[in-house]
Length: 337
Image (cartoon, rainbow, N blue to C red; front, side, top):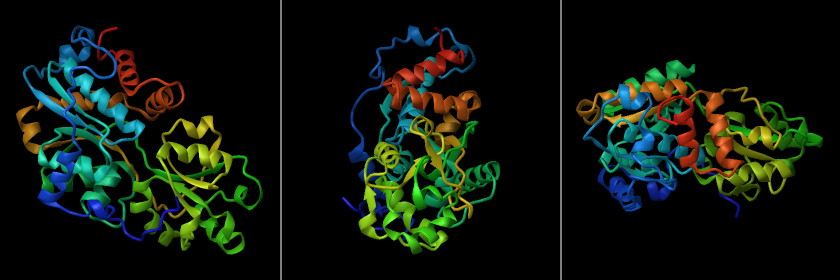
């Protein structure tokens, strides 16, 4: 169904709350599923024999691992869960929580001990800034420093890849849509071919980014031409040009290549750079300083190429996030084969 455009970077109305209320909402979202095995049956012995069991000692510790609900986050969460177990820790699995506000609230309240987050999201959503910091590393340093000081949240790693929102179209789109190579050209499209200015997006993007994005580029997409759907459908819908000619994507997603989609240049640099890092409360890190070593080891191998491959395994080849995570850990010698 069409989604009404919003001009606010705040979370949607049900999540627009802070402190205990948001923590309670997060707690309601958490399930009681255990994590000593995921959807793939893995014994403790299977996770031994690699560098993590030799180099990182978390014996006797117990952690609840969280993630957001999209594929990349689920894989990162599962990698962390199995890595912790390889290092001797016990784990509980709370991957797949619905949205940034929920999983962050769960981290702050202690319902989740650690999860991977993106520096641009931290800067705008949790630290309340309107404008990003230029440069991925500078953005990461600014976010991690300020979040530690304000909120007692530490950012570990970071990973060797960054991710961010982008807008894509079909590479072979014809007519005026096929002439849009820079996002600033959407204004010309809106002026001359307004009916072609159709956009697909998932709920979090539409709630959080659509209004500011339109303001940056001086456009207003009619609400009847904005389609809210599951994130995975963005790629399919825009590839076939129905119901939308443009769609929200992530820059690391393997479906950009497999579906022959073109990422449109963000020539006004609206979307924030998004280096990923493992976020954890200060007290948890103080109690378990080995987490920093684990995050650095994983982060160094989480390159853009590696993440694209892992996403392709799940979104195209039908593997589970558990299988992709275990593949990553084995291929990099973190666990035994």
